[in-house]
Length: 114
Image 1: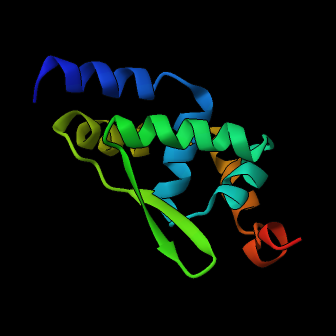
Image 2: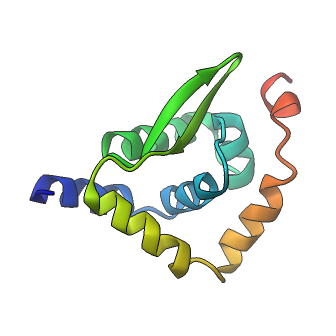
């Protein structure tokens, strides 16, 4: 672990939407349209957040049929530590709990193909 990894992890995790995305991805793999639906922001905005999280070593992506799924895959020690603590820090957060409920309503078949 080095100072550049720490800097990247801190910068990537210093945004509310990116924290919410990380919390969602702790539960399951998701595509851009599902994340956009839960956050209530545009798909291009979600893509920018995902790019920052990927660049800083928090997430990876995989192509599965029509969709690109994003998932947690911490590539450095700081990201691993942050994700471990994030679960505890946000366990009772009202926004995160609301996001989890909305995630259950995110139907990629309807969201992505409409």
